[in-house]
Structure formats: structure tokens, C-alpha cells
Length: 134
Image 1: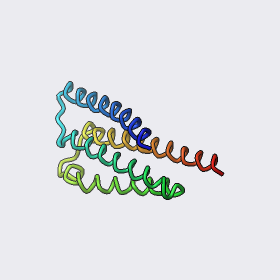
Image 2 (image 1 turned 180 degrees about the vertical axis):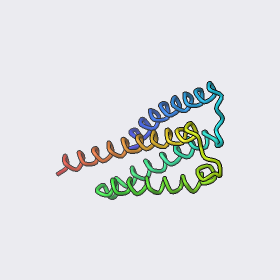
Image 3 (image 1 turned 135 degrees about the vertical axis):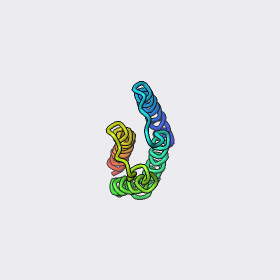
Image 4 (image 1 turned 60 degrees about the vertical axis):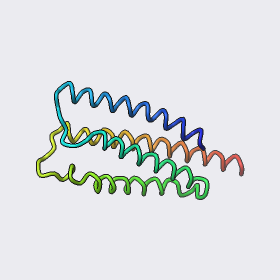
């Protein structure tokens, strides 16, 4: 469990860091300033990733058949928390331009894909273990 979680998180962290710095470099190169902190958005998604994969990992030991449902519910909770935490940014009086909108969407989908891959591999591993036992 710990080895899989640590290896995947290190890989994810490396890729996320590369995308984060590429995104910041691009915004600086075109002299675009965002009306919000991109650091805070990446930090939120990383913390949500840690909570989700740890929860799914622990749940897979107790209720392996419910992991997929839990992951689906956790994505909706994550979206709700994101909207709650960043409501001032998302619902500001002035509309966001394209770069501001895409700068929110990139980390959201990137971490969503990482979480989905991790949970999918975990469910396959749990399924393979249960088949080999039975």
C-alpha cells in the first residue's frame, strides 16, 4: 500500500510541478497577471489528491467493492469544496478572461486524471487479489 502510494505520488508530483512551472512561465512570458493565486489552486488540488487517495486506499482494505462509488462521491465533494473555497474568484463581478479560466481548469483536470488512474489501478489490484484468493 505505502509503496504504491508513495511511488505514484512522487510521479504525480513531478509531473504536476513541471506543468505548474510551465504554466507560470507562460503567463509571465506574455505578461499576464491572474486575479487569483495559482499557487493556492495547485495546493488545494494536491491536498485533495492526498486525502482522496489515502481514503480510497484505506477503504479498499475494508470495503473493496465500494471503492468506485466512494471515489465518485469524493470527486463531487472536491468540486463542492473547491467552489466554496474559491467562490470569490469564481463568482467575481468582473468576468474572467480565457487565460484565467484555463488556469483553473488545467490543474483541476490534471489532478482528476491522476486520482482516477490511481483509483482505477487500485481497484484492478484489489480485484486481481480477490480472484487469486478465490
